[in-house]
Image 1 (cartoon, helix red, strand yellow):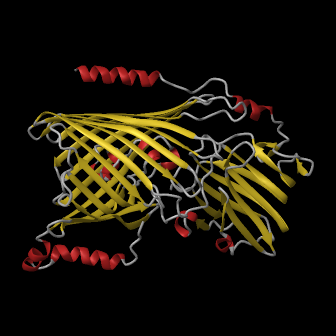
Image 2 (cartoon, rainbow over the protein chains, first blue to last red):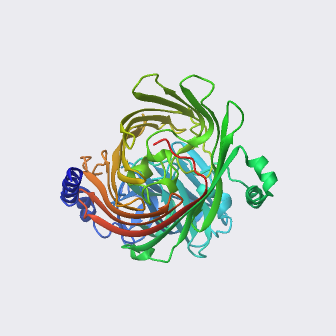
Image 3 (cartoon, rainbow over the protein chains, first blue to last red):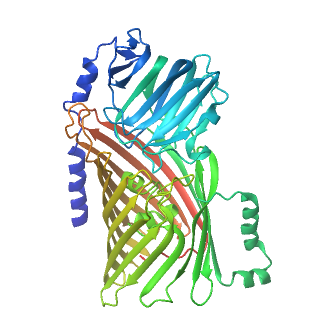
Length: 210
Length: 360
C-alpha cells in the first residue's frame, strides 16, 4: 500500500507537470513575416543579402539564402521535405536541415544540374557524400519534384529520397550507402539558391518509418 | 552489423541441428544450448489516424547457440532478424567468447555483444517486462539495445558484500542501429558499470548500478552518458510478487564547433504479480531536452515528454508471454500546444528450447 500511495502521488505530479503553452517568440517571428515573403505556405527570412532574390507570388528564385520562419521541433527530430524546383544548366539549389540560425552546422543537400543530369550531394560536419548515381533517372531539364526524409534522431542520420513525379524511391542512405555524412546540430531549415527556381517547399512528418 | 548474405543456407544449417537423428544430435549438441525466440506485436488502436492498419508483425525472431568451447572458454552466437519497413533482415546480434576460469574473481568476453551498461540494454527485447522501450532508452541506446564489438571485463570484488565492476572498450564505428559502418572514429568507445546487490532474503533482492559511457565520433562529437539503474524483486515461490525497475540517464553531446545538446530521461516500472501467470504493471516515462532554446531569443525553452503505460501480462509458462499495454504519450514544449498520442498494443512472444537465466 505504501508503494502504491507513492506511485499515485508521482502519477498525479506528472499529470500536472506541463511545459506547454506560454509565449512563443519563435511564433512571433513567423507571424511577423509578411505573407508575400513565402514559398508556398512556408514563410521565410533572408539570411544574407536578398537583393538578388525574387519572391512575392509564392515562388522563390535567384541567388541568396533563406531560413524558414517555422523551425524544427528539436535537434533530434525527423522530417519530410517536398521540393518542386527547376534548374538551368549549372545552377544549384541546396536544402539545409537541422542547422543553426545561420544555416551552418547542419545537413546540406545540394542539387546541381549538369546537362540533363541532376547531381546530388549530402554534406555534414565537413564531409560530403556524392549520391548522384541514384538520381540518374531524373530529367533535370524539366521541373523536378523530390521528396526527402531526414532522420536526425538516429545514431547515424540518414536520408530517403523519392521522385514524386514517378513515385519511385531513389535512395535510402541507410541501406544503399554507408548511412550519411553526419548529423545536424540545429533546429533550423532553409534553402540556398544559385539561380534556381523554387515553385514549392513543404515540411511535414517523415514519410519513411525508419 | 554483419548482414548474412546466404540466409537460406544458414537457415537450413540451423534447422538441421534440430532435426538430425538422435544419436548424431546427442554428440553434436551435448555441449550446446540452442534457443529460438520470436516476438509478435500488433497495434490494436492508435490515435494517429494515418497509421491505423492491421499491422500484426513479426517484430523479431532470433536463434541462439551457446555452450562450452573447452575447459576455459564458453561461446555464444546469436542471430536475430527484425522487420524493417516490410523487409525481414537477419543479422548477427551477438557473437563472443567468454571465460570466468582464467583470471580469479573475473570474467571477460570478446566479440560482439550488448554493451554491459544499464539494465534494459543488457536484455533481449523478448525478455523485457514491457512491449516498447521508453523514449530515454530509444534515445540514449537504440530501439532494442546497443551492440558493438570489443572487449568487456568484469571484476567481482572479494568482499562479503556483492560488488562488481564492469569495464568495456569497443570499436565505436557504429552506435545503435546501423546498416553499415561509418568513418573511422578518433578513438574507441569505453564504459564503466559498477553494480552492487543487496539480498534481503532468498526471495528478495535489490540491485543497484551506475553507468558511464564515453565516445567520440568521426565528426568530433563527444558523448558523455551517465546513469543509474535499480531493480528490486520480491518472490513468493514461483510468483514474482513485486518487480520495481527504474533507470535514469543524463547525456551531454557536443564539440568545439557545435552547441552541446543536453538530455535527461528515464523510466520507472512497478509490476505486481497477481499469480505466477498474471502480472499487472505500470510504467512511467519522462524525457527532456534541457538545451532546447527559442531560436529567435536564445532563451531556454522548457521541454518535457512523458508517458503513462499500464500493462497486463499473462505468462502461461516461462516460455510464452501475452501482453496488452496502453500508452498515453504527452509531448509538452513551452510555447506549443501539448501533443497527446494514445496507443494500444498486443504482444505475444515465445521461446523454444532452454533459455539461459539472467543473473537477476
